[in-house]
Image (cartoon, rainbow, N blue to C red; front, side):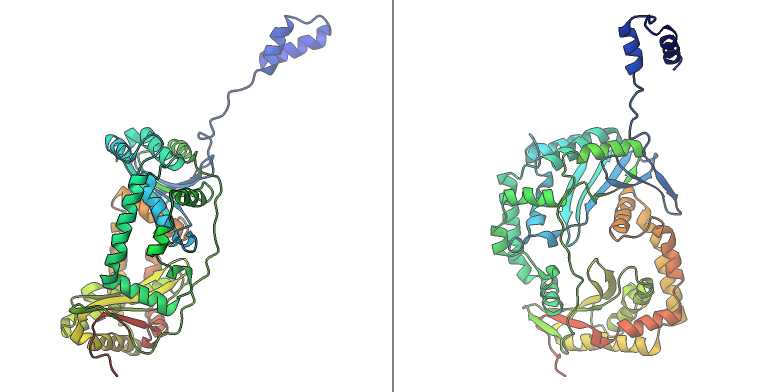
Length: 465
């Protein structure tokens, strides 16, 4: 700046006869300060919570990241996700997104499948992708000493997956086996029957068939990847010995080959049909009957959600401490196990349960479940049951944070559910805030036996009125 000031003063004083050569003046005038590294000035918001110190930032290329920096463990656990999944499969090509994610670590660029896996072994890293109904994921773990080379592998997979004939033919063979074996899978048959009974026309009820498998092509997988794996809306969670600016630069390098924007679709919320009066029976020759039962529940952001979680623990979610297990296994010997849960997915929320019993006792087993529903509604939870449920649900919660991988996974779950960064610190308080009055009100509302659709897979007896 001093040189520039002197030069300006000299020009003003001498008008025509400038000091020094014209070229020297030009060089001085056009010189610019060094470019600022965008990663070193990236805005980082820190939430210093009870369970983890979470650093939040958006990379210069627009990827949203939550990071827990853990210098003592030289391993980086990484979760990457998009809020589009198998519901984005075109009609008649169900299974396309699953096929695409299957191939994401089956070769890229100049590396065929075998060479790609060999490179991951050399780096002591893992990388794999999968999909669900509403989300698509890619997960990785690596040594932080090998982070740059490991992210180069991820970048290659994102930019230039091969979708080669060999892995594609293997995928089709595996899927054909799955199509055949699922017809003898009691769990699958029960889920299909519930979908057909309660929401047959919803995208969630679509499933892979031999015809849809035959319609999958390598070109179709490439196009599906371009729709889903994009930078816009991409979420990343990470835990390991790495700083925000280091991770941001690596993430941006990895996603450089992804499109900026993709395609989505509006998925309606599920409206369940009226439950049938009698259990739905799916015939399957086997000595036991699988019983599944499902009813509507509440969204994750409903004030009653954690009330339902607490109440469910006492009814069927608490293992041997639950009423169902105490009555149907311990007292009556009808089952080895029966349990219930509360699920709040993006477009469907359910209170569900399942258990197995001998074919001969299927009717008694189902009636026993209904009787316990009626009893807990009539009697209500006890104060002791409420205290036990709270003690377990709050005491076991920290076990979900005992590894880098678990922390990264839990953070991604929170992000996909649209929950705030301080959720981990508030969760136990929400459990503790549940009152006995509220728990019993929720039980009376949601656990009415007539709310539930029962499906029995096997050759059950004793279902007649």
